[in-house]
Image 1 (tube, one colour):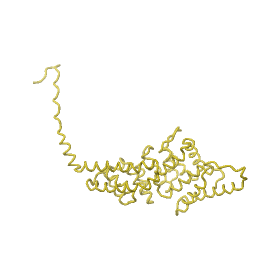
Image 2 (cartoon, one colour; image 1 turned 90 degrees about the vertical axis):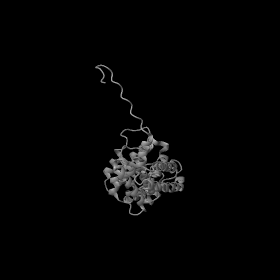
Image 3 (cartoon, rainbow, N blue to C red; image 1 turned 45 degrees about the vertical axis):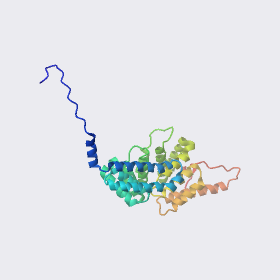
Length: 325
């Protein structure tokens, strides 16, 4: 019977409640081992929290113990992949763990398989790690391609990929894009403090400026970092550099050398510059030798000054554009 004009229409009856077993049935059809895989991923996540947390405090402990955690995680993830071969999260974590253990081919295969499932635009951590692997292998074109997919607003997730991309561009001789990659990502206004990602990107920018022989610009970046971080300057940067897996590996010596030099620790700086210069056909070996020459010249000058007139050299002095070789 139709309602009369102006008469309220009766409420439609509520839809029948869906049987919970219905959704569980289809979940199990799509992912028959979903519960087991989820449990494994949860266990892997807890395992990997241990070495990650260690990097925040005791880096020596991380070096000594981290492999045990990654070995355990690798076995779990291989089991999870056997249960669910097309699970993108399993593949991504497997790629990460294999990479940490030095199983490069297995890492590349797992990461690329994960990206094929999700698409490169949706997994910046995965594309960033894949790009870093190719950078360590010296394959600049695929490295830059994947690292570009990993870019986004500067944050703790994108910071390492940003630094890797800048270094890769510099290795390809594209110094201006390398500088712009970092400088455009940094806050445009002065901050009363620097977060971890800003600290790392700022110091990497100083490294790129130094490599491009823009010593005044490198000095300015380092001076701003020291002014902002004050007593935390060395500690903050040491923590950030400890977290960084450098590509190529000898870059660690370059970064450490510039950090020591900016503090006025010239003996330690000279040792790191020498290690970088002795690492083979490194692209910025002449810059490292230039720093060594400047340190040696300063030490000769100080030996010629009477002890009562000698003063300790302030940090950053050797990065000034005047009077350096």
